[in-house]
Each structure stands twice: as structure tokens, then as C-alpha cells.
Length: 140
Image 1 (cartoon, helix red, strand yellow):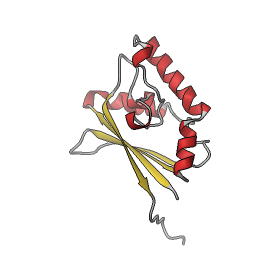
Image 2 (tube, one colour):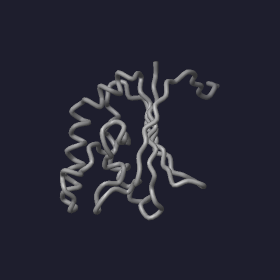
Image 3 (cartoon, one colour):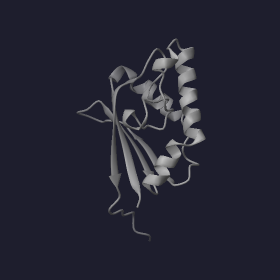
Image 4 (cartoon, one colour):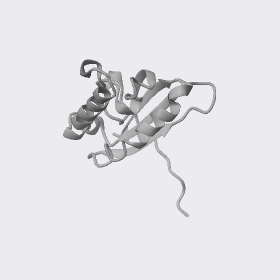
């Protein structure tokens, strides 16, 4: 059964552009993973300072496998290295890079806005869902 993971990132207005830039730099980090189906970064329009990071996976097992993958671990190393070169210490460095899965799944990542002295996101929460029904546009 397909699953959706939504990471909810609280981002102040002064860090929005930086967060979006870092997510743009994550291209290719998850797309080739077996079972990966979709990614979207959703910018808040009004009434909230929370970005939503949406990923869809063929199964929970595919998501878990990706989290244990070398690509995921390489992302950890990349984010930690970037954080360290910007003056952060590696002990508090982020564990994930730009894929948008937060503390509940192993730490904040480059996509959460690490670099330039610290994170852009001040909080992160992971929501998990099973896809019960899915509908696309009618084919003409």
C-alpha cells in the first residue's frame, strides 16, 4: 500500500528564501530510490509559517529502505560537512540532507535550512499516512 510522508517545517519569514534554495539543491537525492513516487515542497500562502514537504512511496518498506540507504547516509554527511564549513559543530549538525524528513525520522536536514549559521526551520514534525484512495484527471 502506498504511503505519504509529510514533514511540517516551521520557518520564519526571514528564512523562507534560504529554505527554498536549499531544497532546490536537493534535486536527485531521492528520485532514483526504489519505491519513490513523488516529492513536493509546499510554500504557505497565508495564515501559517509552516512549509509542508510531501513525499509519496510505494510502501512503508520502500521508505524505510531509503532511510537506510547509502544515498540517505551520504546526505547526512553532506549536510554535516556543509554545517561544519559554515561554522557549526559536527555534533549538532543535521542528519539528513534536503529530503524533508525531520526529527521523528532521524534529524533535521539541509532541506530544513541548515547552513549559514544554523537551521532555517525552527521545528519539524513528521506525519505519516496510508493512501486509501487516489484519483487523477480523466484521460480524454
